[in-house]
Amino acid sequence: MSKNPERFQALADIFRQCGEHQVQLLIIAGDLFDQSLANYTDFEELYRKSRPDDLATIIIPGNHDHMLRKEALAGEGLTVYSEPTLRPLNDSRQLLLLPYRNHQSMGEGIAPFADSLLHQRWILVSHGDWSTSVNTHDPYERGVYMPLTRPDIKLYQPELVFLGHIHCAQNTGIIYYPGSPCPLNITETGPREFLILDTHKGEVTSHLVNSSLVYYDESFLIVPGTNELEFLQDEIHKRIHAWNLPDGWEDRVQVRIRVYGSSSTSRNEIKGLIERSFAPYKLYKDQAPALDQLIFSLDEDKAEIAIQIQGWIEALEWDAGPDKPDKTFILQEALKIIYQARK
Image (tube, rainbow, N blue to C red; front, side, top):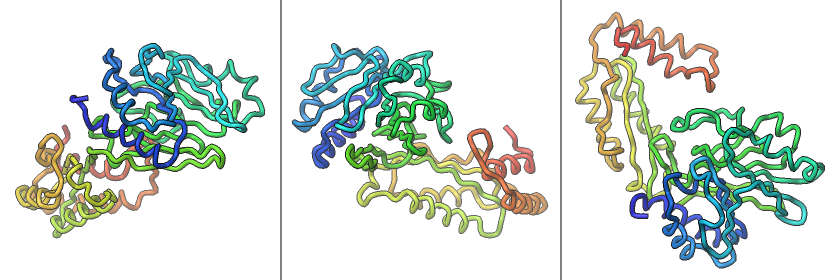
């Protein structure tokens, strides 16, 4: 607990809010523990102190704690399902719990229950990749983990699906990822959340985790022009406003800042503007704003070319996707070519 206290604080807050919202069942969809952890005493202590008396808790193993078994944990109302299990959720819905299995798809895990699920209202909780998601793969976990596919959804027809594994909260139709309740790395930006399902209405709502740590990872692209500092200041203001940070959370933020492109403005002026603008927040790992990809140039011809190319790129009919870069990245690469600064 002393190594990453913010993670325990986030979980304790979820327990607290479960009590406030009169939640009867909490499900943790895998990766509660790291695979190297063999002693669960800290979790058991937090569970004992933070859990509301009438809250039942279910844990299914994920790819990081796939060896977790029910015998490893002790706690009233606490159950670990290390084997696929179909159980009633209420009078009208069933719950299929699929723990992570290496070298297996979710469709293969659902198949043995197909007859029991036919013409039933049922909800899937598992741990892995929704294979058609816009943002499926975690940059720190390469490869595909226990995938769920669109044909699986069409064939077995779950009412809702809740998945662990992807650390970024997202929702695609009936597929929900709550994301990590506390950021584990700088790519997990913004306030974290958890989900509550009203099992009678079938409605899903998201709720903010009162976390002591919030990450942001901001990059700014500068194109040569007469108002570079004004442009940058305006962009910084827009980014911070878009955070929609709750009041009083400023001291929880750690932000990493990077600047790309080309500028005819003094680098010290740019650095000073960034530091003043982000003064209420901590810098991630005390790293100064990164300007190593910002090219200083007074070449007016190249600046004019850069401005024209920016206009062409902005006018493109272009939809970014998992395998296609966005317009900002295209412009950034174009500037490297113009200024012969490719790395």
